[in-house]
View 1 (cartoon, helix red, strand yellow):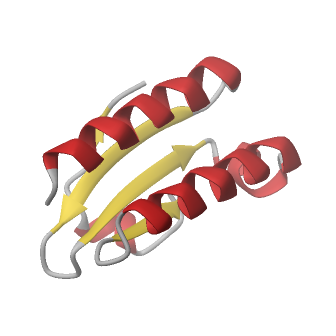
View 2 (cartoon, rainbow, N blue to C red):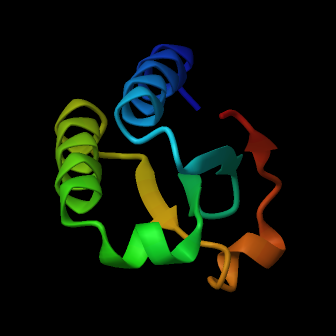
Length: 91
């Protein structure tokens, strides 16, 4: 895991939370799949907020361009990944 990418991603998620303060964000890194996992709740916001979707897509695209060998997965609490990943509450 790249420390610079972790810092960059945390900064982007802080901006995301500032823009969408009703969501809760948790993040972790899964070494088995070499990917950051970001959980956004509530599920209703994650599934139905188009502005949030666009911001997530922008973060994802920027991340992949900067770090193509590491994955980035956005989920909500209904994802099976939420059961296996160790996620730390951020916002």
